[in-house]
Image (tube, rainbow, N blue to C red; front, side):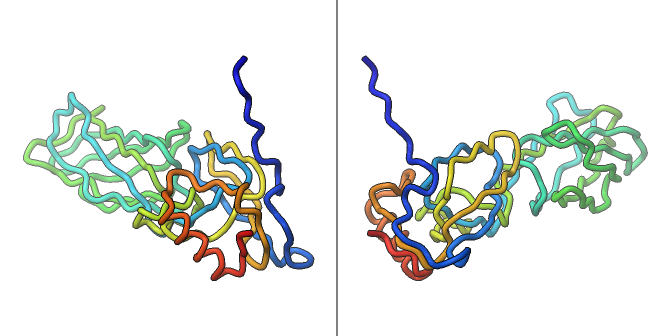
Length: 213
């Protein structure tokens, strides 16, 4: 018979906390995750995205650096050239959920929906239906599992998730222990952190007056 492990119940890890709502905060967990209660969290201070030209593009222009801010979605955005012009042209951008982000012009800075970039013209002009895919993997200002080995802000433990969240399709609001509490160490989720990472994470929590017992 297969063994079934019971997950940590909502707020089960809390041993004690400050009166009222002093210990708790409302946060936003980044899209693309399923996290159990008791997961130790970090806060992203930087975003991440990559871009790729469509394999059948006529134009050979290039995508500049993509800057990601909230409320960008995690996943693949599609940029499509909608009108061609010499050393120019216009395009549309569609988000991972199929919604329209906006329209832009080749060689002119674009900023909408949490994305900012410039699509540069090339020696060969873009043609209608040329495409680029912009893949967003991190959105700053959102919480993710603490990772001591990271360099995107999540290397600092800043909170403990109160209850299970399923953020597969969207950024999701959640409540956390953020300060002035005692928590049960055996019920915390440290993800892939090794013993050194866990020790560092506990120190981060202590600095927030979250004592791991």
